[in-house]
Image (cartoon, rainbow, N blue to C red; front, top):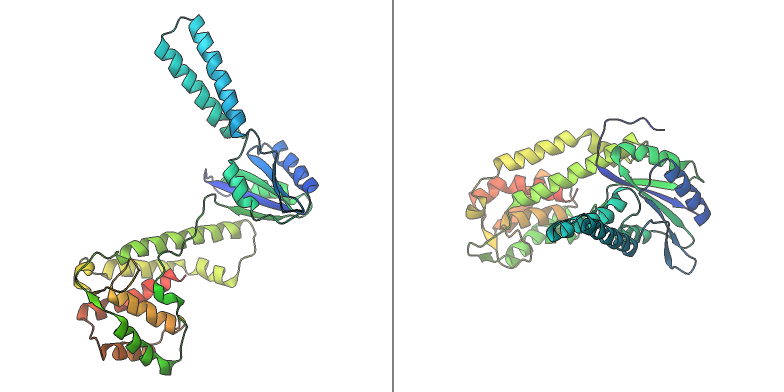
Length: 330
């Protein structure tokens, strides 16, 4: 068994991909023999059909057991001459205890979880899923790894990645240093200032970036602890998280409290962040391929201002906006 570091009740899903349903069934047998009961097997047949095996009680079965228990409780309460409201309360309690208790005791995994991760299973391949606490995840991995050399992963259930807050300009192609002034002039011509309007605060985006980076750092730390191979980029993130945190703190501290009132906004954008200087920073970073240099900054801003001068407040927060956009692209 792996050495357990610390104690945590955070939930983990351990996925073991096997080349045959026989090996998956053997692995599931070993998993449940070691008292990891919240487990199941998902198999994809040669024709592509997905089959859920040994998932425990279905919702219909749990509901049926709950109804039976509720009826038994009502009959017993009538024998004991209990009040009607007490009978109803006890029956409802019995049903709920059966419904949620069977899951809590490990008599099944939610079908939507099995269907979601079943979409990653190839034809003739099988997947063993085990839901356990973070503290016991290394033990589950050890059990699964003893059967037929599977591919094993440990992840947090419900993890969702989203790029909805990415600026529109990040999809633009990078250009040479000589072409930057033309791009800046084109961007300046496309911007139309709007009257003061509601714009999403960059600080909310900063919080999203901070949470995403911290989740990524935590997952990479766990992968390293479980002896998974990680890339050099992942090693850099683990070693230099303190630098990223310092930049986040700098943005939060130096962005003026009234930035949404003093910074001009643009009208022709679908982005929730309408601050002009934010979009200028995003365009510059996209055009330079995220390789920003002092010369490229000066060239871009000078060309932009030939048509539309920037305010002192915008020039003040421009370095902060660049760092925010770079954090979004992490």
